[in-house]
Length: 618
Image (cartoon, rainbow, N blue to C red):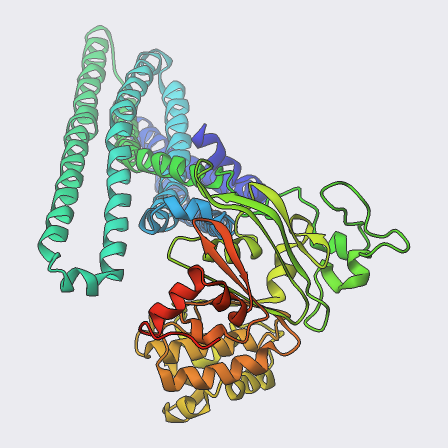
């Protein structure tokens, strides 16, 4: 149940919660003692018209002390409850964001980014209202109502017993409101998530929207979603207007009429204490004040519960990134001496075996930049959706220090090979090995710390040029940053910036050209001195002059490193040790540039097409 899971977040704060509850009880007792004290004054002194000075001063002093004590206790409990609430929501937001960071890319492939943003921000904000406003209000007012009934029984147990009828009526009213409002708020949350997704998509693709004159269509979609959200909110307003304060006010008036009628009947048969009547009316008035507050908070409670369901759905998602699921062999354990085994179960530490214990071959299960870096794809088959294979029976070997290029038409499976090597997805069948160790046995942190990835469309973070190269990684020193800048020939660009490496970078690096963004991503990769380079059409968006500088830098980078490069421009991979030609998820040709040209197959056709039909010299 959602409410139970939300309350479980309070367990680490039991001691502080107990202190807050104790202050709440003391504050409630001090507050409720006031009307009882006044009733005693009315019946003992005001009605008989005796006004001894010492007694009146004593009553005034006690009343003032109770009021000040109530204020102090209520302030203390409110402060403690708020602190607990803010700590709880801080933990929840951290858990949700942490979970998202470790979900597999297959989850993001089918989940709109705006929907996730809505759950992490809007839904957790609604849950925060539960802890900050709703729970504290219900606890405080629940204790207050209990205290009121205790005071009523002290005054007149018969009338207090009759007032107990209010409790099931109020419970029925709350239950009815929750039943109908949950449906409305669930629709509202879902539509808000859709709206966030649409806004995120439209803002990121604004240039395409304007270029294709799609502004009107996008406006109509937003208008339609807004209309659905408006309708859901109107339904909630109708529920609030009918079942919240108006219904409680009607119940309050009927109860007051009943109490006055009871005292009127009692006065006909004997004397009635005016102080008791005053106190009862005061307590009833104070009884319905917290009831009204609680009823108004029911709307927030229901929204928080619906939001909590959505948050827990995300937390319960069992679509971990490969190698990230809790319970897997920790990388530290493997590095400390845990034996790594192949898929067949054969140990890697047998004397004389080709492969050795993982920690002996390289620290932390993966070899450092200076280690061998042998990459093997062994009959690998892969599917994104579990139905259609995008890679079929892929086998190839990249020896240490070699460069292997992947070429083929769009959708042939080139990028999928890169994704699998980074362990973003699990293979459907077959096996990928690095230095003889199956990829499934290598910790993701160690794997990705040794692999450098440069993509066609680099992503830059808001910050500075320096922070985008170092990414706040303590292992990337200032010296490494400057060496990387020099290696990719980024120095002329840095000198043109007013603040150099401290120049601010806006979101996604929108103020820089595509070539400048690509150079920055190269520097970011090189600064980590990776042992394996993955180049996903890294020079596709770079002009010819910049490409020459990058190719020179890549030549220096690839020295002693294993490199897999996806190439669109075939002229950039002519010196590769091996070129794999993919077509519809299969390797249809392999060889060097000259060998493939002599074969006269798909590679030659692609090469001639890029050369404008001029016959290649072989």
